[in-house]
Image (cartoon, rainbow, N blue to C red; front, side, top):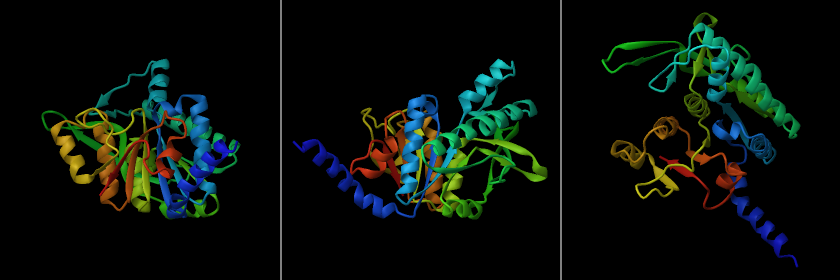
Length: 289
């Protein structure tokens, strides 16, 4: 008669050690991919993040929005160019980036968090000047530097400023738009921004929400846990390839800078965050030092 209720109670008890372990800890969540575009999934993920706050953790959201930027650029007939996976950001493109990431995506996330019962504060570009940035350069095949315009990299994080908001009960929501010298705005890769935020906080966890289950091994089976050394070998051997490489490298950078663990999980799975954090097996790949 009470089997279903007993099963639910067991789930709660399984979560208890993790709730105790992560209480008061900073959890940085890179929110992007398909999880941002399915309305119901979006509400579910953000509700789960509110739950993390209410059970005593300090979640920080760093969101992406690349597909939305590309769609807006296409609609406005502005060319999209990429060099080594990084968007070439002209002044025209930067205006679109600021509108899409700051005034559209960021505000929507903050709004849903509030509707879910949480307190949230959005930061992007000059609003809070949370991410300090500098211009990023890349080399082409001939070894020459390529000018990416207003594409930047993180040069600092106002983590003490964010910490004040978190202690007041707020969930910070960051767009990857940084401010450089002279007040110039820079478009920053969201994975890199999330890794930098986690590194400055020495966060307990950096969680990267993706469109795939995690790191897959040679047998095409999910690797549930892997250390930094083995991860480097998997990249060199080609087992880790394509779009997973920059995500894993961001994770390795975060670990090197003091983040305890990095999780790469499929954000399309309902309650992915809770399943990864509060169950013994998890659902994705956990990268450790």
